[in-house]
Image 1 (spheres, rainbow, N blue to C red):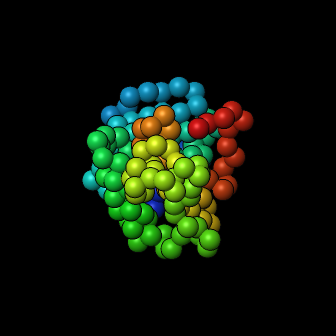
Image 2: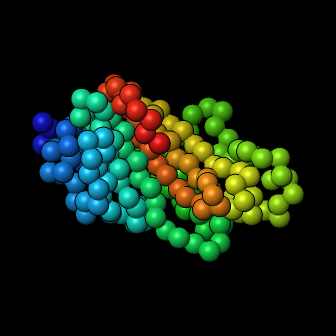
Length: 168
């Protein structure tokens, strides 16, 4: 077990850590635990979020997800949060992968919306950025399933195998 957690893969956890190690170093409030994931409430980059640690079939940590929990009445605020988080990730990991164009139209009706916020709220567009390191794939996304915009930041190990079950 690594005691120096300054260069951890996700929060204070390294890919391959066990649930006991994660619980030892996580500072958030635990809200859920099962055999395949542990969830804590906390903050990242000054923003409230759920921190989800996914465990594979060998009970090893292989994927971490920040699910940001802010609730806004204006979808433009979610786009602003996404842009702010993207700049923080760029500062730490560099530019996004080549060909990553952020906003993606998922329904042709987006062309009839007054702006990107309305298109997001209706689920016609989503935002997505991806980074790759030696050890991980990092994905930031904003979408609005069931008309509820949400921002997520996911870190997936390239070295620790994932679960055989569907995670997200």
